[in-house]
Length: 269
Image (cartoon, rainbow, N blue to C red):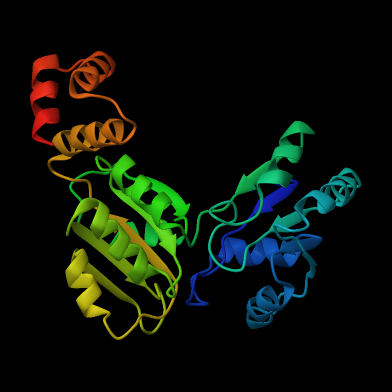
């Protein structure tokens, strides 16, 4: 016997239309309606599987407006499924507003396992550690990109980016961190799927003629992260006008470091 829920969060294929579970198809056929980002996009998948359930638009611009409607429908006993254009809702896609309200109002919510670009990507690249930090779409500004690259120097940093911006993003990360190791995946699960692992310059050279498709990228944690983080913090404090002795006191106190060693490193920089 399968438990029934009020609200279902359902992953949809990120590229290959066959990457959907039998359970997902069954639920989509039997709920009262499907909330989706773009009804036209979702309808193509529904037509492929002969799913005739009504679609209701639900995207980041009307999330708040739809809440009362969803709550009203659920109170009347109806069942609802939430999908995004591709992948898993709530992972860089709408859903947070309605889920919060459903939990507050005591409705039962479940999420089905399924397609997600992050896990699809991470399961096919070499990694020494299971740990990673996912930040969604990386910001556009060079300053923010550099700040993120430095902040996560000790992490395997995973992010999404567009094909129009990714090569510029990688160039900015190279400025901030040097020619470090990265992995880049594009068109995952599709005909022209490609994953490239190497230094930033290797990847830039590989895609020198341009790149197409949705992008997932991981910047590997730096092997000398502790020393580089210290250098970054010293330079940051120097830019703010702190002197070497002041910097040694601040950083040794905050991070339990040897004050003399910090002072010496600050003088070298």
